[in-house]
Length: 442
Image (cartoon, rainbow, N blue to C red; front, side, top):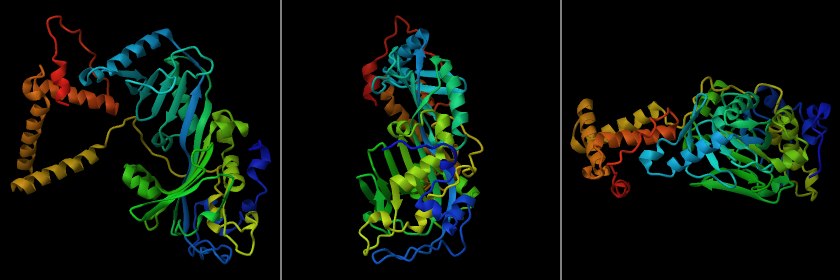
């Protein structure tokens, strides 16, 4: 891949085949967030192409969905000792591992029992996964951080990075980060069939073009899987329903989605290898050149075309009208609504838990014939307490059922990042917990 200048007017006004069509209905819709009442009118389909010339299209949100940052620096010796101690606690039995937590600012991190690669420690909460290096190697960053997509739906990347650096300063000496990976995305509603064209319609520098389906439902395309630059076009609405990312449905609704069309996502993953070749090293330079990155991805690296049997030169095939719209995102504008509130937790919502508790009560009522809500709740509590006693080994573990329940709560408290658990008390010399019994009860 040759280097490309992303600065100045060239970024704003690339002389490409797509930009020449920027005044079409599709391009206007992508810039303004509007869709034409009768759909987007495109070129007449070729001999082998389906008639995709009219369809409804509505851009909803666009921005940064994934962000990985590498921070040069050095962990302080005191923090290294503290993290080694917490990691050793995390490697112990569950009731002790619940104490393997570290609070930085308002964030309560789970300290993992193991890390990956050359990194010694891993901290996780709902906002960040932070891998930390314990040595002084100049080849290994002090911190390698993955920012959660939900946090990126609440704040901009620059604001997030500033707050993240303040957190990392509590661990040692840290410097401005380099971008290891960034994913740019566009969510859009469209009634066009995304399997209405074949693999040959993708004109790309990548070698791999794959399509996917689940239970006979088409779910999307990937182009360039495993490479330094990769594209995904996939059924985001279906993915949200499976993953529980219901907050996106609310954001789409605020952007004008009427739930009458499926929502798809076009996403480009740029790894560091590509960013360096494009002279984009810092987060600031990446953010300033999002339009250039999107233009490069949707014009130079990948295009969706209307195949023409009469012309074997694929570079001359007309651009699909949907691709004209998708490639014309206005990166200088606000990319749709953001989440109004956010918590750095990995906990399910109380509404989600309440729905499943209600379902359990109703199931108990159906089995036992109980139709009174309070009576069903009492019956559920009785069976839950029976299970609690069995999991506790029938009292053979050395702790009572109430203490065992507190330990289960503390284990989930660490997993959910909701608060700090009480520290481990000094072990009495005369007391030895039967660890075999505790482990054997699961």
